[in-house]
Structures are given as C-alpha cells and as structure tokens.
Length: 120
Picture 1 (cartoon, rainbow, N blue to C red):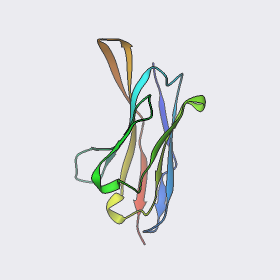
Picture 2 (cartoon, one colour):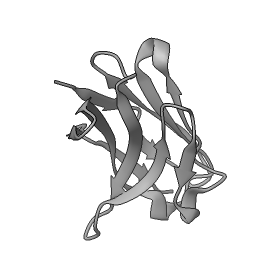
Picture 3 (cartoon, helix red, strand yellow):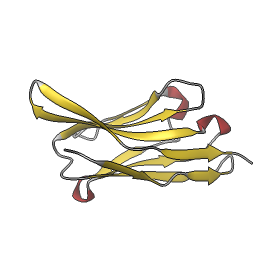
C-alpha cells in the first residue's frame, strides 16, 4: 500500500511562487513514474509534470520553464516548484504514483489534492 500526502498549496498573487510537496509512504524506488496532475473547476484533470526513476522529466506546454518537477529519493518526496504563476494555473493539484508489484501488474495511487489559487 502506498499513501501520498500533498502540501504546499495556497493563495498567491500572479507572478508569485509556490512549492508543492508529495510525501510517499514507503520507498519510492518501486514507483515509476511520479506525476503531478491538476483539475480546474469545470475541467478535466490534466497531467502537468512527470518524473521517472531515472530523473527524466516531461511537462505540458503551458508550464514548461515555470514548473520544474524533482524527486528526493532519500526523503521519499516529490516536489513541484511553481514559478511565475498565472490565474489559469488555479486548480486542485494531485500527486500520482504508479507502483509496480510485478512486471505485469501495477496500481495507481493518488493523493488527496491541494488547492492552488492564483489571484490578485
């Protein structure tokens, strides 16, 4: 069983920064990849950023260069540093993990979500 606990959301003015954290219960070495998703009111959940065990990253175009994702394996934590925030970044942000139990079997895990509101 894996538990994901997000923190770091809040209210910030446009142009500001926030850092989201996702603490994973247990080792994250068997988890690949880890991602951040977001869901704005009235919209579908979308994949924002992905990081693999090897450290490879991928982003949606709207956050490239602004939201670096990183992982601290020693502390079982994944981060999303959110810079130059825009009102359209307002959403609930979710941490996601794919844990493999066998080569042909994995389980998806989600955090509870953390609200990010960008407004003046």
